[in-house]
Image (tube, rainbow, N blue to C red; front, side):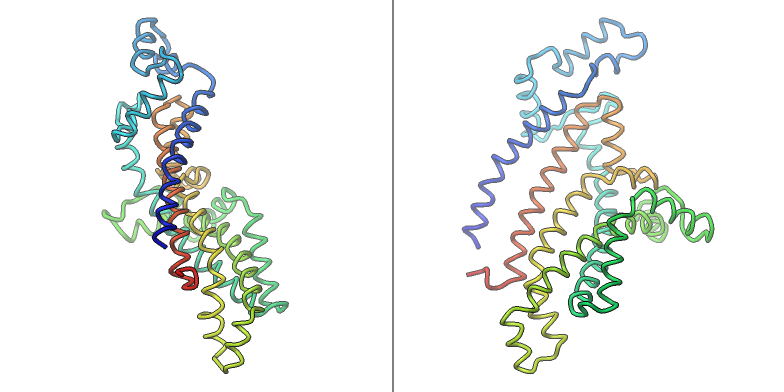
Length: 313
């Protein structure tokens, strides 16, 4: 396991280097001059020249990358030219919101998806299997923004049980926080649960037909023990990978869901930055989420050893 960890860590540096080049390069393809937008309606040539110098836009592309990469290595992701605030502070402000939303969504997805997948595999070709597959098809086919609007109409407008939009910090009012986050978390978790259900069902069907499961049943073990202890632990390996990757996707910001429910997370931050040509914010947020995505993938690989003891040798 230690050798595997060292090998994976050794690949992180070149991977992050390539990701940084990709992020910086794609950012430069956005049309328009950010200095012209930031200069306002007057577009004073003096102001434009100052912005070009401040943002290093008057330098060749490789030099601009070195300026940016050097700052990143020092922990400086730049400054938002629109609101005059360090990008690092903006990320730390939005991170708790997005992290909470992603955590609630993945908890809902795992609870529904894995449970439905196990039931569908154990009760194969029964009404429970068909119901789980219908749920998965519905979850994959339903647009998040439509489901969000329907939930708002039903639970907020019709019943008045939950707030239609907005965000309340859990440190201010935990009950109000959960009330404002449960609908967007369910919208996001619903789609992921459908995918997890299909993967769990497929993996469980393969494991349930394996020799060691038949041996466990031949020993007279309770069916619940066979399914949960012997079969599920081995079937969870692909599910862990998918769950980690989906969680990383959620951390990048659920743009449509955050817009529907007015959640001030990464999604809204990066959309506003793109529209305002705020290069530093776009680069900083994308680099942060890409790094989190890579690290989550590494953690998923390490979780294999905890779930499947055979891999430790």
